[in-house]
Length: 280
Length: 292
Image (cartoon, rainbow over all chains, first blue to last red; front, top):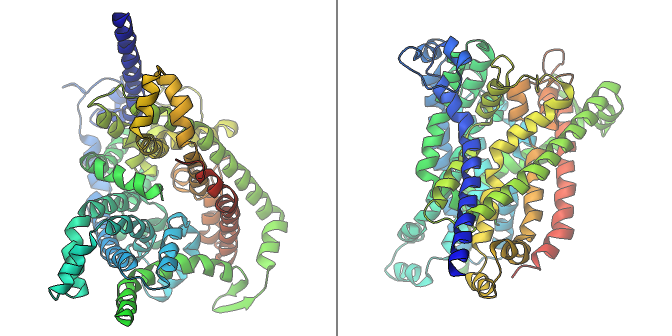
């Protein structure tokens, strides 16, 4: 009786693992197929797409052409500047706002808080025409600054909402003790900051991904070659070299790999930020 | 002290508010404002609802609009019918209690496609299903009837991680004493899931559906990356996002028109707003009230 139950339990475990393995393969295999084939010669890509590169079929010529004809070094630098700039700006502004929204019990605080939270679902792209006009009149067209401003605005609602939940859990006594010791408000904020550090990590990781991956705003606000981000760079490169498979696969690998690595490193913070942010 | 509170509150929230209002909230409202004008060079003339009248009565623009709207509904429906059940299945497997340390590994692997750029996902799949490569023989993207479902499924492949994580978090929040009680009563995994876990997380589906709706009606990147700004074949993959882009930015054979672009944006915003408003006004609270 007990043995029968244990073996059915084991069969159940096996089924769950088998299903998850199938889905994990479905999720990863297409990406691996691209990465593996990017290191092969053109004939090998077409004749044996599922084979690993061997001494005969290995070739990095695709990557050489990507670096010759593309502008990937510049693209990476631009993406890095925009993503880091927007994330830092979002963190600083959202920390100040979330601290104030949970700390000072002024009458319109819930209203301002609600205004931020409502923005989580705001389809900001639909405001592109006015954004475009503003950037033109401010002389910010085709600059990375324009992207940083828009992305910061886009990221603030979720960041403020997330950080508010973290600031609410800070013990009141700690802040009072700091104030009794004569700390100003900014100093008090800096004292409680280590407590909300997991929140800052979660915000940073959910903020970065959509910015790095966005195609819409780089296409419209910073399309010139020297301001192209990686996402736009890949899009344009692929459009130009449709028949050069090794170069295409190389460009796609270069676009995909940094993010996958970043996500695998920060996956816990990211998933925490996402599930809490969406649950609002 | 109270007055000091107001001062600090303003000083701390103003920078965030300024950026958020200037580059997110205000542009949305301004879109509606601009949609009431006809701009010629530097001169803007108030024309009331003329732009809307033109959009819906001009044979070309109205045909394109309705076509994009219907396509967008299909794009949304495929996400809702495939992505959400699949996300539920994955979340249920991850929280079945039959995994030990491997949960985190599976969760990370399954979520990896979601972290990629839509552009990269589009091209990865286009290469894989390209008849030139020979893995798939049929021109899925080149045929009018299969192009949009194919693109939608690429998007489902990428984003199934979102409902998965969302439902995973909800399933983890089911109190363990409830599950323990079910186990003591002799309920198996299947019964426990459908009789206990599922009813408890059911309210989440409303929110997932509305987020999917907003997100798919904001769609653009995947279609544009694969098929450009006049997405063929014969506009069969045109959705509202690409229609909007084409209208205000122009494309081959179509002049850029900022006023009409603002008009299209306002119509899309209204489509999103009405359904979202109806959901939060009528349904959301009722769904919430069944929560533990």
